Image 1 (cartoon, rainbow, N blue to C red):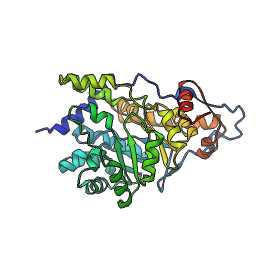
Image 2: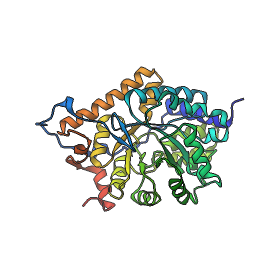
Image 3: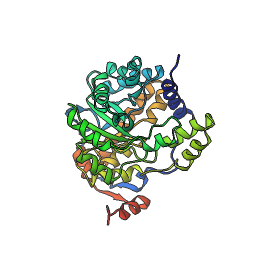
Length: 357
């Protein structure tokens, strides 16, 4: 018999693939401009796009974002994405492991990623409502051990949990528990939003708690309020559907969030949330990020074939290299120091927040 959790995980995949779940607000990357260098003084082929990821050398500053787990179809997705991650030497996250911790027979749906990607960084994943329980530290350890993870993502999904009709909104004590977990685990702890972005205030607090990385997962891509709106509408949960509609575009745009975190902390930054190509990633790195993460484009291309998903990622990596070539950046350190202009609403936001003059 299929459990409620398995049904929910399957519903998240099908809703994301077949319904309109795109935010109506942009990421802000259209306001970010890299300055063209007509005389790069570097051969494109010699540009080094490899980088460090928490002690691991990876092939490109690209992350396969956390997507799914907890249902048989998720096992196939994680296995396919793992094979791509291994071949391209890039990190990968898995979806929330709550399902498998509550029901160990579902662990294989997450372990499929590690089995397909034995040598690249794989990130475990748990949400705040799971870690604030009395056995939160044990659950965090179990999530890491389950997939022999190289790090733990604690996802901050207060918006999604608020709209989801099965949602868990217990977040009190999460920061203190994150600090406990960060000081206990033998692998780095990162935090990850789920489409609403991270402010400088939150970034500073989690850095002080011992977090080593932040995945901003900002506004501008998939709206999880929208995903839960569609699910609530289908189940005739009118109040939750109304809540999802009202908060469809809630959050901090991705480009803004990258600057907020970069200007206030020294943690490693993953830019995700509406990242659709390598130029977005290059712009994010110029703003202060270290990596860019993609989810929806890979899920959609993977629904066609593994080959399509791999080609999609290869194109993204090629776009990063091209942006580096056109800014005269020999490596990612130079790209991060390259000239960048910020205009439009993104500039207005950053000026209002005191991050630009």
